[in-house]
Length: 261
Image (cartoon, rainbow, N blue to C red):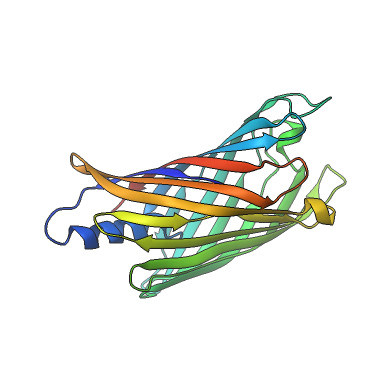
């Protein structure tokens, strides 16, 4: 997908180990299976959609809620709730705004992974879209996995899933892949570099309309604001591969709220 500007609220850090604490906060904020409640509000601006080259806006609300099953295993739930607004993208196409298809995922993850984190579980998509342009019209499910390593100043990993439709009211079946690589490099004083694109493939489309592959990245910084700390992140991506009517590039403005225990 695209670019990202993230705002994370969490307790501010103090003392000589400030850099270490800020790095740990960034890791917890961006780790998909950390034991911290997080609610991202992700604002995606997709530029150059359709023959009319319009800008599509999508707000993804993505609550992430972890549960400790026992001393060895955690259960992490992540739900993506999309809300989209798009002008008429081409001749004969109407403008649209409303709720899209909701996508919950569940990860079973070890409680003590050290500098490596992973999780596996199912993902689902419910046809909750409020307009034909905003829904697949299919109930879908499949496997999902996440892996993350934190060697030194680096965070590297990915979230991926594959879904197939199992029923619905449209003739076209869902067969889609989602891959979100994550590369973070921690600098000093709360600064870090980031590249977190979202790669997708629609296997039901023809070969020229199948892939969306963004390339790019950005930077972020943890800053103090009174007794709180803010995680500010900005990324920009250009789609080197995209469907014919897909966006050329994207920006993402994200507000990520953290609720540490």
